[in-house]
Length: 117
Image (cartoon, helix red, strand yellow):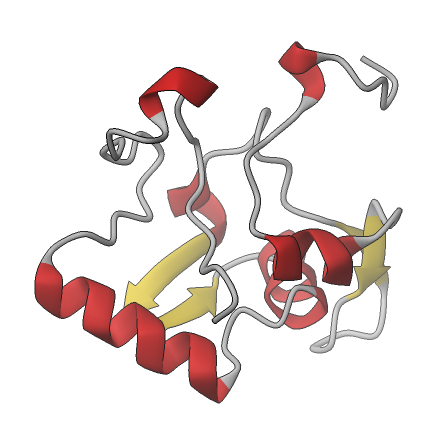
């Protein structure tokens, strides 16, 4: 796809994640300091790179560490919101999350990001 703005090359993301990601396709792994690619929602499986520990998204790989850090998945406010969504049973970070009715017309989601308040 080469980064083209085409439907098959786009992934659903909240405003905050999209803003934090910017044009980056790589970042430094905070564990090693090495340059690493980011999680790729069209090519990677969520569960290979992350796991949930309660409402906290824990990275499992270098790409996971870079993505969690750059996109700030575990900011206090985002953890609190994710905890509430988990309590309500509406948060699904799996490779094939449940689609909400408003997302069904947008082609579904491969990864769920927490929207800003």
